[in-house]
Image (cartoon, rainbow, N blue to C red; front, side):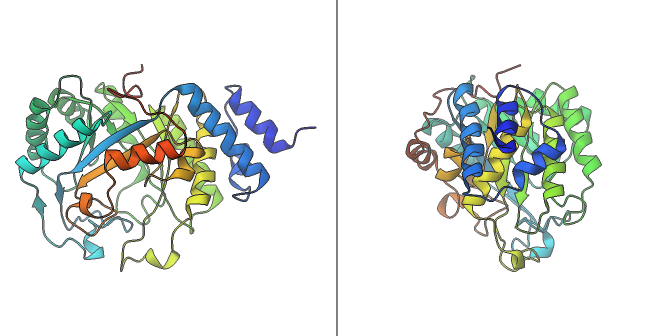
Length: 332
């Protein structure tokens, strides 16, 4: 006779949407238990049926003492890491984007802080678009936008945005969850596809909040979802809580994947790791430039992985990687 957990997994594998109570039940299972291994197997099964894994590249174009004060972010003014506004040289930004493209990135992201001048960001994006191959997919990781700004991003050559209603949104950030959701709707109305994630997960987050944010992610109807852990920023108020282990994150990202339902085949995790890929993560990021999880200006020399490192991790997890432009952002 099947256990309730295996019955829930079978329901997800069959394409049915899980209820909040069922999602909570999966999250409550101890990582590395027999049932957790089954959950991770089910998640990996969904990812394998979806096709090849993808590796996207992201370049952080600026840093600032950002007034949004997301306490998990090294850019936050309150965390006293980056104390001055700084935009990388255009030549460096283009060089990093081209390097990621040449290494095999399936999409190129440009990331900016919430207080970067939007027109300046668009100008940079336009120059990058001219240098990239025509088939290269560009994604924006920027502040909250309205419909007209979404149209401007589309005009600049972006195919989509990354945007999440983060854990602790409105409490450990100065951004309301409603504003984040309004941005998602504005982007979709403007013709941009949306990728999201249940993040940044820390030991302090409750089962109820994990369930809440998972359902919000599902309702966005993104091209990919997933889950990522919070990286401790030295001296931040959240550092006291420590970090979730990769083993626990493998369980969490597997539950999120099962909860997404049919049509959401992409399942990311960050930072890249082998347990996550084994548990069904089929999207990693390589990073260059400024990084909200890093205290160095050029993360490619610090925390940021390159494409080769991400490829090696997927190889260790026996997950073949897509060559060419992202399928996640190509799907309707």
